[in-house]
Length: 230
Image 1 (cartoon, rainbow, N blue to C red):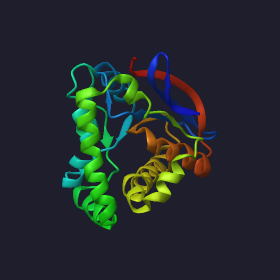
Image 2 (cartoon, rainbow, N blue to C red):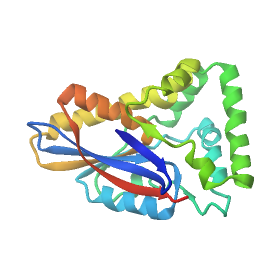
Image 3 (cartoon, rainbow, N blue to C red):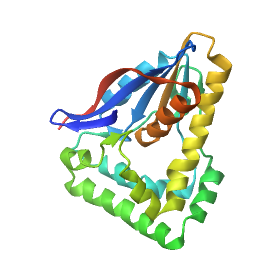
């Protein structure tokens, strides 16, 4: 199942609804792309606020975070793109919200475990890409980086190339997210309701995989939300 789709219509995120036999609880997954139209972010916010509880990402304040997010923050300054940076912070939802993510010290500690050479390369490449996109980027260029498929394992090669960085960005945060969702299932699966999961698209692979393996949740519905047109 594709999670972020790129085609002639543009970039679209696939909002998935997961259900399990014997559970009254639904999980509604909102795969986030961190740069898009304001309409996209407003749509996600509105739909997430209609859920009974929201599980949202949000790494705490840490100096390395600003380096890693420089590519899309700088790209958003390209006015020809007409795009904005994601503004869906955990404290901006009206629905009850939990934030299973790394705090600032935890992220900084994980960053220090990344080999120095990898840290230097990432610290240079992210803002360099951002500067290029700010000056010359197009929506088509951005779209080429954004396809996410939960059955595609091509990402494994990049994870193996920088395992410490992958654990920081994906592995450790996947575990926090999935454990929080498992806890919600265990406490609330007998109560009808919907859990909205507003988290980066790359993390939805782990959510789909683990909820299926642990509790038998499967995708029962899918809805396309346009991130931006081409």
